[in-house]
Image 1 (cartoon, rainbow, N blue to C red):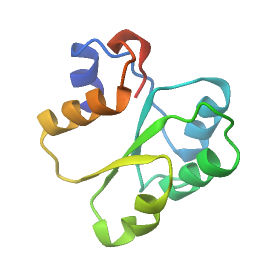
Image 2: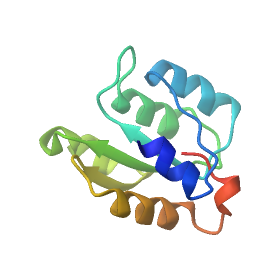
Image 3: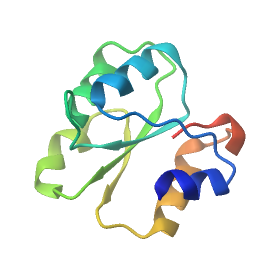
Image 4: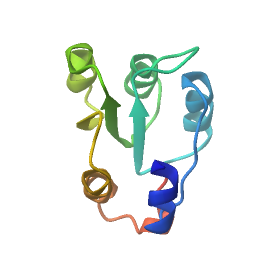
Length: 113
């Protein structure tokens, strides 16, 4: 659903099945913003955030963390690349607004989520 909504808003969207695939894509591409779920197989969202902070060269994307477990999101909130934390379930209009805010000056077709 998120992918469909963002495509309708004219954003270029790439998805990853798990954190390992997300890190692979992040190592090969530049993104303005990333929607990151903390609960993922193989490498969780915390592992992806560690990669972004410790290993990813600039420019670093702005991250919108999505989680159903706000108690477990404390580490994610402190990560310097985290721009927003969006608790699940969320309103899709809030998601679009956060993506727009995090994309900054990037045009929708230039941004990936």
